[in-house]
Length: 236
Ligand code: BTN
Image 1 (cartoon, rainbow, N blue to C red):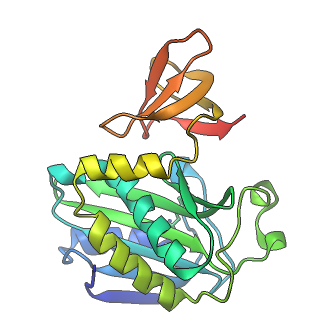
Image 2 (spheres, rainbow, N blue to C red):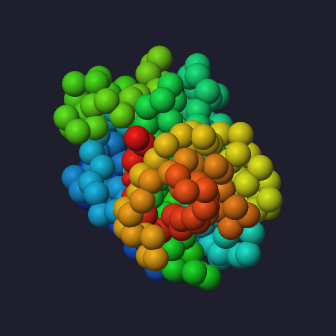
Image 3 (cartoon, protein in one colour):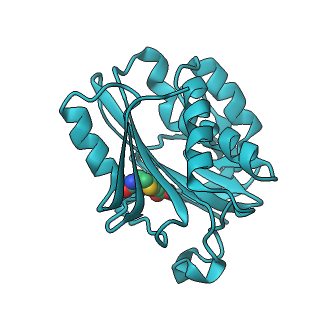
């Protein structure tokens, strides 16, 4: 269980920004910032993240210090979110590499990790709880969904605290093993852009390596390795 002090805001720009300030000021590991509403919620790749007030769990945890076993944190956190979500609502959760959480083939939660290694990381988690389909921005309407079934934010936070307590101390090998069980991309055709040497491409996802990189088999048979920080993916 991660059970540090909690700072709740009715409205803030981004819980990750508040948690980052607390981390810089020396907040203890496990400190969590929550908000009912964000005015400038942030997603990966510089995208925004929005949710109607009170309809999502918006939280950011401070984790410190960062150690070797945290090398796969970007994969461990969505595994924790999967476990928590499954304890709250029916349905099996999967992870779309590196850290989107899916339920019934749609995105229910996102993770934004910002870190100053080896000092601290901020684990930002947004879980859609009760957002009607028409309230999602039009471009997200199909891929996004909510946990539903009357799950409230406090129950979701408690479940996430518990699951993070387990997954933030897991050994990398355990993370890789569990990720393989929840890999939403396995065997699927994907395309990517934004990588270094292989800037764009498409192929079939075949799993992850022991460093958490995505393995993609190209149509010619070669396999490329994609690092999570570098690429943006879509399903074909
Ligand atoms: C993504 O899927 O792109 C990541 C979304 C992460 C959103 C959460 S909501 C709580 C925390 N505060 C933010 O500004 N972002 C994260």
